[in-house]
Length: 219
Image 1 (cartoon, rainbow, N blue to C red):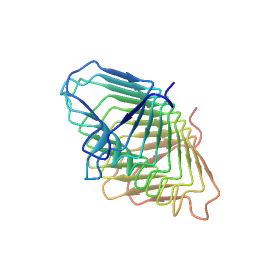
Image 2: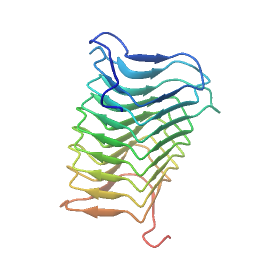
Image 3: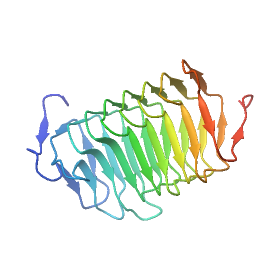
């Protein structure tokens, strides 16, 4: 039972550091990292990575899950977790080929998911709500990712924010009550493909300051 099996960091450093590949973490509450920048509930250190994080509650950390540098062909899976009440829910830095699926990512004081220099990842079927900055923040060469079939609801500073990110696919997402905008493409974010999304309950839904592809008919 992930509510009863608790790993508590007692406010010091990282709660769990993973320094070898092919690790699976499942069935825990992981909480109370230190409060310095980049202190994490779970942090990967292995360049080979290939980590699976499934069916956990990750809460009250500076960063909930931190996927750090990894070799280009390594991968990580984060699915069926509750990631809440952290500063950043998930922070991915220079780690590619991630699958982030079927998570609840809510009530984090910065971004729900923050991706920097992260490519070829799939973010799908997550419930991303009530984060105090962005639901998803893609920046600095986070290219060739797929954002598919998420509920992105009531985030306080954009549903999804793009800066200097290209060739991503954004499809079949529900955007509702994000402020001030559901979706913004800012500063050098081009050739992203956006289709079959629902944008609800905003007076201004989208800002595209770049050159992207909007296709409202694609199946």
